[in-house]
Length: 261
Image 1 (cartoon, rainbow, N blue to C red):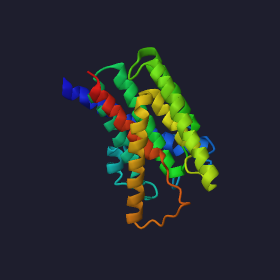
Image 2: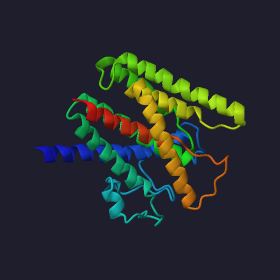
Image 3: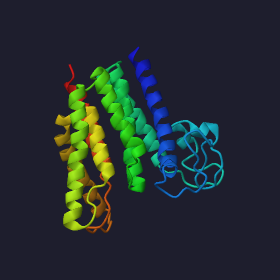
Image 4: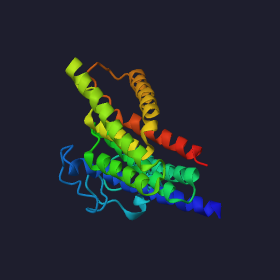
């Protein structure tokens, strides 16, 4: 029953997206990337609460996407608006699961692809909100890519994955170092290098040039949109590159799936 299967896949993706929101909100404080207001907690406790007033969120309002609509986008306790990021991430989680299933079918490769996409969503949003790509996510992502390809060659063979991981990190690390020596300011963070290395571990070294190109184009488009929106930008304005790299990695993953017989 394809319809039932698709429904189950989407629901699982929405639930994964709901958990990603917990990671995005609580992770940066847990890892010391942002100041902790002492209420964020960890991934297990406390139960979901309103960031504005601290009130626990009612069970019906925790249902992915539907809960946001039921609550009309506001906290039931204090009336504070709920960020659109929450339903957006949940929808992206559902879309990622469905996309992985459509690309790779009912296989372990599809499950691995969904995990990769979910991690990219979390990293992209965290980078947008904090300016950091945490080691707590990028390093396990790289190791997972090496394991997935080394054990079962889900996307590329193990050697291609290992070269991709090393080359992805080394190239961006070299560019970042050269830029800093020439300009005296950081142009690329080490988080970007680690994320590119992780993508190399998943998709192999041949995917690195198109990932960098697509990421650069996406980054330029993002900067243009910011300019058109009236954001004042200078040479020192920080522009998170993680979301662009994540988008490029997702596109190359889709290309890998489409090219798979």
